[in-house]
Image (tube, rainbow, N blue to C red; front, side, top):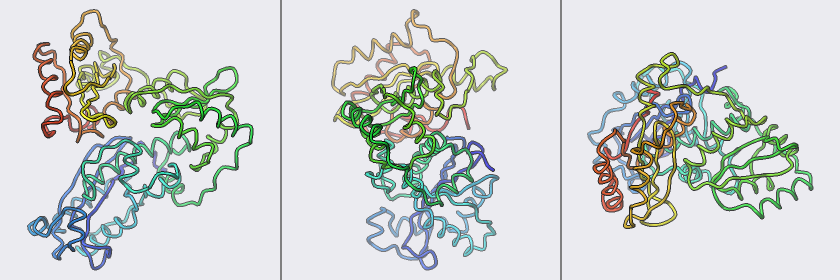
Length: 442
């Protein structure tokens, strides 16, 4: 059995000249490596197909004949793909995986590259079982459901990157709601027909309906409360009302765990949040504090950044000094920007400003969080929270502008942030405007 945390998941997406793995060819391939719930490596390349790309595919993907005419050959690209897939405990992951895996494995054969096929995980099959039935199950729709930005579609890297990010979200759901802890269990889960949970008792259904009427269409954290105020289960959601409705309408396949929660709870409580990062941080903090019976909570001790016995001293220094301001476009209001403040590896707060608004509030927060002697954040660092921030930054790397605080002059730092806010919608986001890569797990 391979624990999820020890597996190498190679998330693959390809673009091709057509649908036949025998007669058509790959024009582009991307591989995103996921390990221990994080993206740790990326690879992508155009591939010379030595055949013309039909015009409708050129229009769909943006990959033209001229782009691939001098692209690397298959026998140059696929040895690198083989090396990725030949790692120990490695699994091939793709959306509607049969298409991608058939093309990839057929290319290995055609190029006489000795390759032992690895088990294949299909995010489409998983999504059809664990995601609400009312959302489409294509890459773009699932990415939107998990609030993953996609700047372009039908290009291998962008689709693979989005798939890798929502696959990580799926791994968390499989672990927390279905008690799945190994890759073999994932394979069995995706390939086995599942039956919906038996209909809820009318009393339970009526209770959920009442809470649905009271609940907001807002992101937040939902808590199932048992007798004596005991918290049974905590889950995050981007829409509290829809999440409650999914239990009523049985739009997802339930695990025995969720069935037990629905039979045992006496009331629901929720806390509304303003954005995805806040939701993820709040869920982590609540689970860590309450350790609910039905959450798959694995305790990770807090460590002191000055305690070199816990981890590598250089890595701890990176975490301890990780202070930044991140700017992201607000998805609901035009010309507004969400500003996130992170100090010493901890999420502090966020709020929204207009790109042409008065920024005194921003400058006051910068002063209070980074420069004021009266504000003191302890040196204990929660690795789960740090990972949440890291993954969130990685997921938003194509739309975020991030400014690392390094004890620079306050006025200079204020000016950098103001210029970024004022020009956020005027200037294209360049590669050096955001942090790329992981902070600690490399």
